[in-house]
Image 1 (cartoon, rainbow, N blue to C red):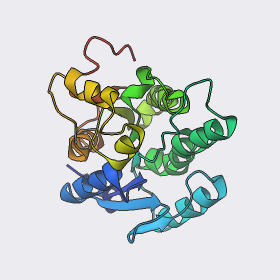
Image 2: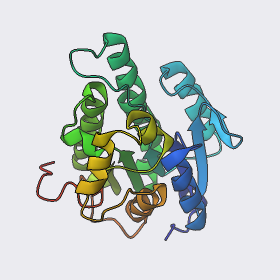
Image 3: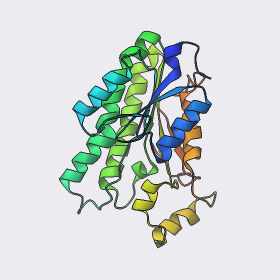
Image 4: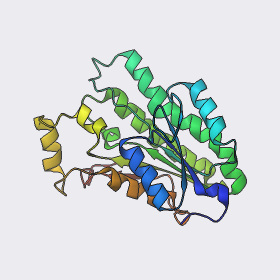
Length: 239
């Protein structure tokens, strides 16, 4: 449940206007939090380009102008699907900026308030692709980077009452997944057929996991990656 102090009721969510982010926003409202959304679009968002440090900094200043925010969901991301051979450096840099650098920048902006409150929850959206997936060179590298960042945060911030965890979605039925995995592709069907639960995941499945990690009672879970993947990582996840 949310803590009783008013500033602890707010949760910053990047990329919260569509897909998994929108489901997280809806779940946060159900849980009693006030979502603060950073996104390029959306009627309720503070508009910014999270791939641009200056635009992100200005949005973060607006977000914390009325007080600290002690919960953060680093959700924004893009895929840039290519093999290692075909991945351009421009795409790779874009993936780092959006998927990884923005998470560090948002975390740095909110950490002082979390430390002062003696409480914080940081959840970063990784991916099952962090374990390796063909044609995901930039995406897999940045999502694995989020796991590394999460583990370092857990080590450094635990004494301040701040936990940091990652969520690694598997095949989730979103526009982002469909754009990178066409529904008529045999590889896409093979993913579904391989899942022990024999179905695609939903954004609500991911939002439920995030809700658990944001909870004030979830104070003894930190530095972990929770795969929401229908069992696809069972016996395969080393990180």
